[in-house]
Image (cartoon, rainbow, N blue to C red):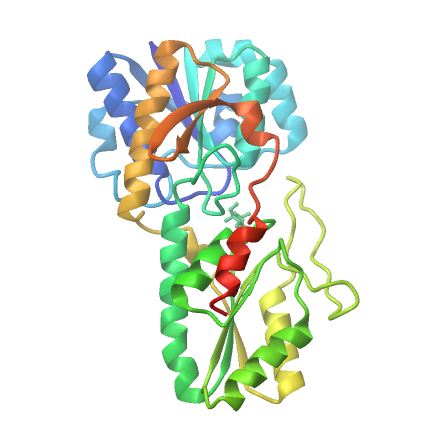
Length: 341
Ligand code: F6P
């Protein structure tokens, strides 16, 4: 078989590990040919692909980013591509496509699938917001990076008796902030699922200092919002790809805390540091397993399906199920974290 593979959407630690795994399983075990499609669906639409052999994936396990590149495609352009799905498949000479990506990629994969392309999807995102899989690779790495940042901020915050507001990624869901906040022992955890009251945040900080504590760390997700009627803050509008723009909730909140309490309060925006660099061991393992199972899915003809972690097993679930809803932080997970704040 000739199997195309592409990575699409924001990059994520572990993408290269999936590519490597797909090539090993397909080429070495099944005798397939793998075509690496450049820059995600843009490369598919433009017919840009190159053969990927075992030599090409040496050393990829530990490398961050994606050697195939990734690009966002405006919806109109994507739909034009979908309408030409058969032609695009023939141009690259592929029998099936493994599409690795987040929510937007899965939606695009579903559209190409409905248009006749044989697609198997592999979910990725540091945000861990894809329903239908217990976890996505990339999330563990992002949480490690964010936790280390919180650990480091604690020592400098304590030396200067400061409040540190660390803004973490997570547009609509607070998984990174919840997990890094718990692992790093943050004193405030603010997530999009639970609009916050700035007065409560200030009371928490004041109460800590009144108990003789010398610093406070507040972890806030980039998509967190204040409760209506409290601090006035609007997130930005969406960009041409339909993604929310953010206006710096961490910086704004640090300013509010400084103003209310007269305490030095500094924002730290961790940004893309959470997405770059080498994946953790857990992400390497999950990415490798997903790649292996994606090739098996292709050979079974399980088109329209996505690899998913369920407990400790990798299962195949319909892509439509995965894009039906975002996986947000449920109340009980928040309650567990809140007990430690
Ligand atoms: O979806 C993953 C993510 O890392 C979000 O948490 C973040 O808002 C977004 O991507 C930023 O992506 P980019 O800067 O590449 O548009």
